[in-house]
Amino acid sequence: MIKCRTAQECGKADFGWLQARYTFSFGHYFDPKLMGYASLRVLNQEILAPGASFQPRTYPRVDVLNLVLQGEVEYRDSVGNSTRIHAGQAALLSTQPNVSYSEHNISNSKPLTRMQLWLDACPAQENPLVQKIDLGDHKHFLLASPSGEENSLQLRQQVWIHHINLQPGEQQNFSINGPRAYLQSIHGQVDVQGGDKHAKQTLVCGDGAFIHQEQTLTVKAITPLQALLIDLPV
Image 1: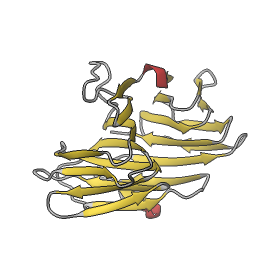
Image 2: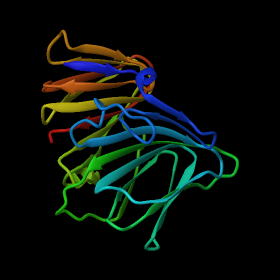
Image 3: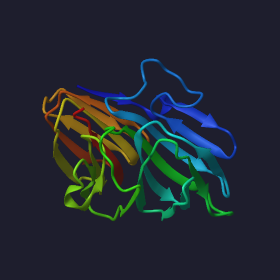
Image 4: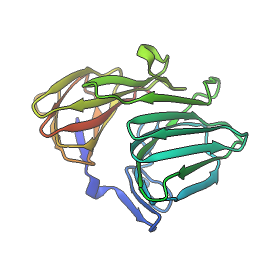
């Protein structure tokens, strides 16, 4: 099964300093049927105004993955660590109990556009507090994984996250590790085909798709495409 979750169906916020689209329940947006998907708790697409910031806050035990699409951001924590990432990079924060984290658009003239994912973290595993990676322009690469294989970011959960960057007409085939996955179009239109010829959807910019009980997946770009495939066995 492949079921589309369109950008128009997502929760939305416009606070002036922040514009956001929420795939799952978050903040003021609440849908009891959309509290996450397997270990994927949050998938937000957000724009912070120049100079805007999220004030310090604590997190549940999650890994927070941020992909910067435009601008530059600085993350700070209450124990004195800080890191900056810019467009074309991603950072993974292994959040800790009793540590607060803030986020700052360090430009006073340009907005910050980014995607943020929260993934449940195994309580017994400890990873580096901050990991960074360049997204690059590869057609496909493994962005994050449980073991940090292929120089990917290391998660505290059995999840594999693939970054996809295709030109029109190009396609990529994937084997899915478990019963569930989620595909998110960041930019561009894409055809998604499961192993069953009837399991097919077309997504446009900002759309996502719940993938269930599909062992293989074919992603074909209709327009220039940037996307994430989140493989969620747990």
